[in-house]
Image 1: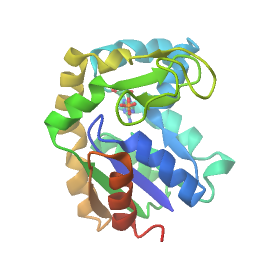
Image 2: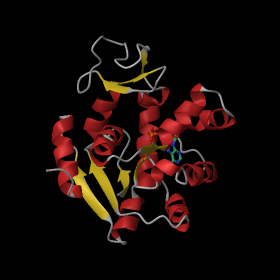
Image 3: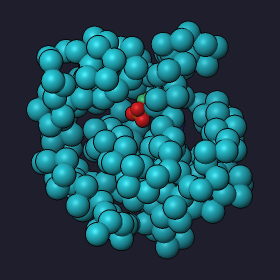
Image 4: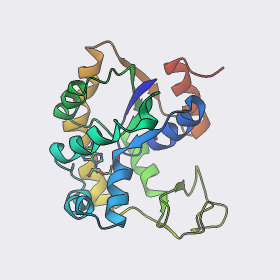
Length: 212
Ligand code: AMP
């Protein structure tokens, strides 16, 4: 299955992508994670991307498209993949189409904006390995310590309230039109995000026809 997940920041794309990846045995490709890793490692991409991420803006299409052209050609993508955070603009969607990789489904996860803002305020991420947590919905066993590697948990700089507002504006203006784009191609399904992770997973599986 070659799947695209759409949804506002904080809609639960990353969490559901991880669960789906285990169920379907295919990798998650998250452009946000690729960029954040580059930032941690201070690579040229990370240095270039920093100002955009910090302001809650999108990294230029050209940069992201080049990264994805390489990444989607790697061996682990040959049996399918889940795209979390790409494409995020119509030019990126056009570029993906030009890569001649047929997408099977596009799933939009819908969550009301007020709930998104509440959710983002509880998000935490491991400063070492990037694992994600949530104070309420997916807490670590020990407060502020990563279950997987023992690293310290931090708040993503772009999860600060002023930046989140920009990210939501950017989502509405640049990414939301992709729902129409893919609906026009007959690929779009919708899942409604619920309070609890497992309940959202049920909606996601149902919308995709996955699982028991
Ligand atoms: P995310 O983790 O998906 O919320 O992404 C975090 C940040 O990475 C975004 O706010 C953008 O600055 C950048 N980013 C991630 N994916 C893309 C993309 N497809 N196009 C442009 N910028 C992106």
